[in-house]
Image (cartoon, rainbow, N blue to C red; front, side):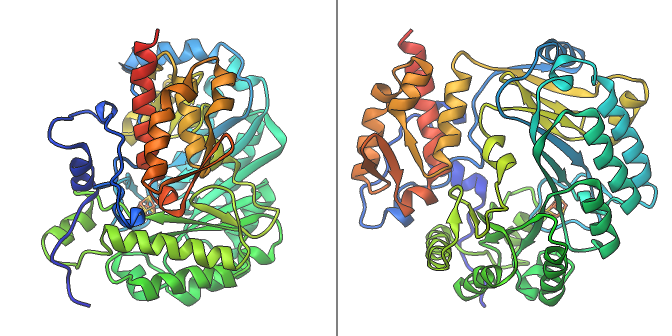
Length: 467
Ligand code: SF4
């Protein structure tokens, strides 16, 4: 395959979407999509964001700890989550912007001991002590990089220091690399009931170009092994848009996932960040660019077609399942207004609309935990309508939204204030109104993150003017 001449990073795509006159994402209020024959490929100039951004007031250091501690004094209510971060990876994947620390021989034990200490720090405060937590997610980094005994102890500690609901979804995210049977056994024995594997692609050449270590056969064998325990929902992430991953490779990825004993699959679009090793390799001509915007749109549509034909059910625009074991609770509520307690160096959480980040620098984090200080580095206080706007954004991920119901739930004129937006998107082929429901077409599903950001921006500004 020849290198492509035109490469668009995520940032350049975002800049072309925002235009030269808009400097902050939340100020992007021109919601109009192109009226074109092919909205799937051409509705917008680029992708506006990876996740919806809703601005707030920032606090750092001790002030951030104070602000979040106040929130911890109150009980949570409704669906609640917890996120546990493991900030090590054995190798760095080329496309990754979130790599934190290399895994060293002593990392697993040292980190586990301190993380358990962090879990204990505010365990007597109301937000941690009371009311059930419905989904826990061990993410990273690579949680499966921990040694079996450490993994077991960490999961047990989470079950001790957090009030998990009886039917709590407990997800372990990981890689197949260094995830032997002994580690699988330790995870299941400790109570893991969902495993999320970052497969990304089954194609050995594409995988290894991206510095993913294992080949196709090892991936398949490991998925089959995990499923054979019959203890958990086994799901995998697939990504489209890598260099050397053309439509034939992508079709094979989706068909391979369909053929395996998986409970669920996520199909994500690759974001090539300028600062990632992949972004630099493409910019320097060391690797060809992957699929462009139009080709990615076709790849997305093809995955919808294949999974629909195979009778998989859709839980959100990106997430599909073929069994009733798969619930996708953490991902479903992670971007909503639900509370999420967070632990571990680099973790992010939110409580009553206040978002917070745990110290990302490992040594700083370790020093604070050893000193008995809650290692919160950053906090952000919510704006006036954060709950409604978060809910609007997370509903858009589900492929449909009912603005009338949301207006009633929040006693806000959300439906009236967004009518012209949905009318224009309907004209542009992104939405099909069905009664009160605004249902996304396949083109709308492909563009839903951009549409969610635009909708939240428009509503945020109009609600402020409407006071
Ligand atoms: S395993 Fe995940 S976090 Fe680690 S480098 Fe690869 S993509 Fe990044």
